Every structure is written in structure tokens, then in C-alpha cells.
Length: 251
Ligand SMILES: NC(=O)c1ccc[n+]([C@@H]2O[C@H](COP(=O)([O-])OP(=O)(O)OC[C@H]3O[C@@H](n4cnc5c(N)ncnc54)[C@H](O)[C@@H]3O)[C@@H](O)[C@H]2O)c1
Image (cartoon, rainbow, N blue to C red; front, top):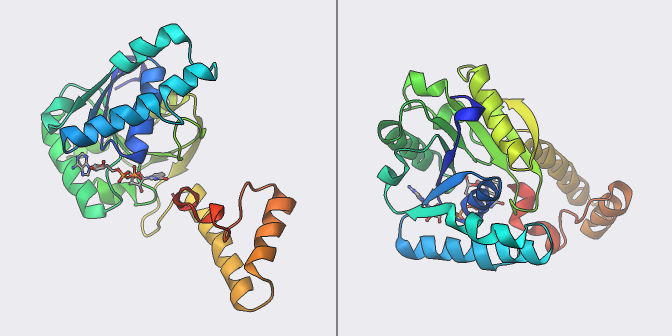
């Protein structure tokens, strides 16, 4: 499927990431369908999208979204508890918990339910996309890629687009263009069997390993490591301070 043919986006999992992804896609003008397991979870996601700190009403208050666009944007986001509610979408962005088996099962089911030409993407923090795609048909693999956003999605610009050898250029270009239409800055990266993480989390994990080695060897305190990175590299937070341990750093 080409970028121009993507009009409706299905988001599997409406948690921290899925809600934010659905929100930015609706702001970008896409019709969005979010699928979570229960009505209660969907209601929680809807509330987060509309009412909370990175949500749509705050975006209007901060002049990031025109007041006239608020209701139409909210109306573009539908919710479902059924996988069949995603049958018609042009592209799926999966954001369910980071468990390989769960993702493999979810994509195998989506493959049978969602129209054959639809693009499949996963917002995995680091699983190899080919592993996630293990039980997906070969035809669909041509339309499958990774799409790794950073949290909170409405505020963070990064999106890594991960391609498998099977991913067609048309699919890679479409996924990239959808992310860019949603205001993201895209880094392209190839899937690498036997690894965990793409650019962001691999580079960060390497730095973290070095920091731990310095602390464990007694060469510097955690505080001094944090101070060096914050004041020498302009990092917003360090590895060890309470703010620096928020999960977003490693996702
Ligand atoms: N939180 C982060 O900072 C962050 C950043 C980048 C990537 N990620 C990745 O994004 C994915 C989601 O993370 P999260 O933090 O949003 O998790 P989360 O727990 O907040 O949300 C996951 C949602 O998926 C739902 N779910 C579970 N099984 C489902 C299914 N079969 N169908 C539909 N919905 C289902 C859950 O009910 C839950 O609402 C993970 O792969 C994670 O590694 C997370």
C-alpha cells in the first residue's frame, strides 16, 4: 500500500503508547480505530487523549491545536474491543505489552482479519521485527515494518522505522511518510537478528553499561556520573537520579 492510500489507522493496544499514537495520527488527519481488551480500558484511553497533560484540550490551550479542530479530531478516534473492528484499516500500529509471544499471536490473528493489502507495524521497544512477524504470511511480511515512537508520543519527535529484508521499498516509504505527516523525525534502521533495541535503546543501553562499570569500579559516584552527562552533554536527566529512572529512558 502506498502512503497516499493510507486513510484509516488501527492501533492495537490503547495504553501509554497506543493512546498517544492514536492521538497524533488523529491530529494528522487520519481516521483512527483503537482496539483494547475492554470498554473500561478504551474509556481510560479516551480520557487520557482528551483530558490529560499531553492531551488534546491542553494542546488547544497551548496553541498547538486550533480550537475548531478539537471536536473533529476527537471524532476521528473510534474504539473497539474486537479485532474484527480493525478489519478495514489501511495500516495497523501495534502497541500491546512488550512480550514476544503476545505480539506473535496478535499479528497472526490480525493477518487473518485485516484486509490483505494493509500495512502492519509494531511499536516494540526492541524485539527483532522478523521474530514478531514469524507467524505472518509471506505476502504480509512485504508490508510489515517496525515503528518505534518515544514516550510521551504527542511530545517526543523521534520515530525509528525498522525494515526487514522482506519489507518493500513502497512499505518503508509509506511508513516513513505516515510518521512524518504525524510530525515525527524519522530514523531508518535495519532489523538485526539476535539483538534487542534499534538505535535509541541500543546506544542508550551501551552508555548505561559503561556508567554502571564506572560506578561499580568505585571510580565515581552515581551523582557525579549524572552531573557529567547533564552538564557536559546537556542531557535532561541522568541515569540514576529519581527522574532519570523513569521508564521512558529505556523504552
Ligand atoms: N512506555 C514507553 O515509554 C514505550 C516507549 C516506546 C515503545 N514502547 C513499547 O510500546 C508497547 C506498549 O507499551 P505501553 O507502555 O504502551 O504498554 P501499556 O501496558 O501501557 O499498554 C498496553 C495496552 O495493550 C492492551 N492489550 C494487551 N493485549 C492486547 C491485545 N491482544 N489487543 C489489544 N490490546 C491489548 C493492554 O490492555 C494495554 O492497555 C510495548 O511494546 C513497549 O515496549 C513503550
